[in-house]
Image 1: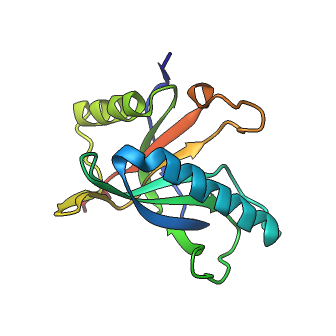
Image 2: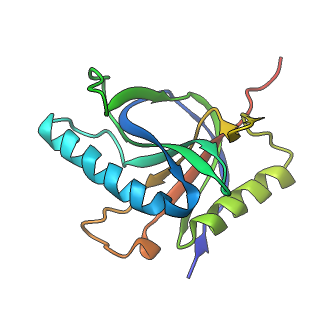
Length: 167
């Protein structure tokens, strides 16, 4: 069963993170995310890094009929040197629209997109031949998988950066 919370708009600060970025087919993305999340969690432990928040999946480019450019990231206090697979980057500061859902990620994302469009909000995004590009769009995994193993019961926040106000 999918539950969808109320959308909200807020201002977010820039957030440094360490993550693993990859390109994966939409149809096989779940297996790829499981693998890179395991690799990232091992790296965090091996490097004695204290996360500043929940892990997230950032969507750089979305093409649901093709490939997804994604990063599995963990917020940190300061960037560490890249090691070839784990890189440092930042979630962009600015206005975001977000909501929290459990269950279907597609339904949660669709609800947020429909609400934003219905309220005249414009996402900070652009089209390329690779797909739908986002300045910053991500899903934060608010539920600890050690506490709740069933992904269908996880609370996930989807957040999409809005176009900056024009002067």
